[in-house]
Image (cartoon, rainbow, N blue to C red; front, side, top):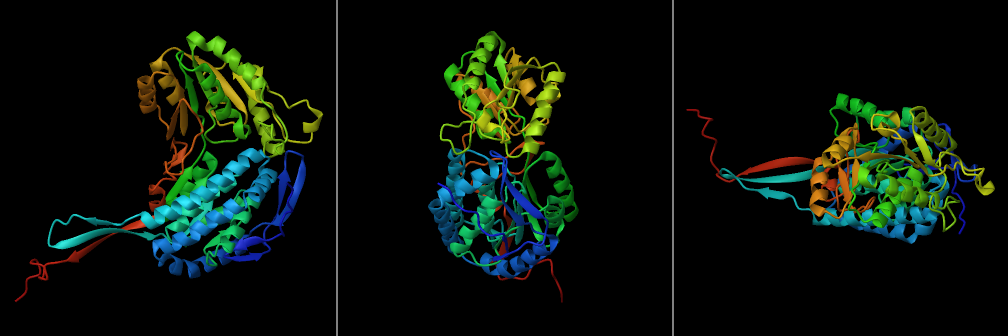
Length: 492
């Protein structure tokens, strides 16, 4: 099904208007053509959005949680009713397959529904007093929240920030990536139609340098939630520190996948393929470092290479496609540079390592699923995030060896373990430094389960019931029950 693109407007504090920033071209990289061009946001648009948010947030924050939840339920229903359009827009914006973008849109609807339920079922705490008073711990909105999301999964990333922030009583200024601005504007239309009061949500696609930095540094922004690259996250953390402002950072990864000789081989190969080559490898949690026990290394890698060669590389609208185009030609060039680096470091390309030869794919930014052997864990290719369909395979001897190699990296986002020995799996899971560990599966998610990373993979957690509290400040209240003056304050 084909849809049309909407007009050249951005969403500024509940109003649709032309941005005053530089033009942003949305590229359909799978075909090498421009979807549409819109006028991006400028600093002036951001200031107007903040002014409107300041006016709107107090009323929203003073509503009862179930009253806010009612609007979030309607947003969830609006997303669910528009799955096909949202999926089409996101596929055109990111070149992801329609299968994946439908799943992401469905996930976003579930995220709004979940945080609506969390909002109306989260209790404040009447704490145990230790004197003649009652004590309570309550939670209040922070105020204005900036949400900065990446280009690889915008609708899901948007929902994971916007839904809990709104549920907690805040106003949200959302800055999507310039490479994928369109689906975030679709979310704004759905929120508007659901009756979200004007001013509580803005969508400001624009330059990170002009809009993103200004949001982080603005005195009225009480928190920033950022998903993206580690270098940008580090700069953002410095700016937040100057303001003593809370920040959530979900950053990069170089996640290990560990295969023991007693694994279910078919299960492991399917999970490894999905973990690295789905989304064309453009995923922070991609299982990009594969460690295989030496006793089975040669046989396992040979089967994995054969399975990788059988993957269907094709157009994102083809239902048979498993690996689609990368998001942008510039990104494909970055991936190609890493593969060239791997060759320079002494790596052997077991499969892939090239652009596809099919004539139908020549206009797109496609890259073949690639497996590289012959490197050790000290190679740059094994240490730096490539963010593409590139897997490095390495042998290991035993548990101690693979724990040491798995942890020998600055990132700490995710890990996959493949073994039928569940005691071993739990030992490895406990020893590996990662925010998420999958055992005999990979890239499975639940909105009810917290997600985040350690080390250079970030700070803080999203999702889960605590995800609501991440957008609130805690306050303690003491109420005297004695009715007597404090004995310290003596006077004649």
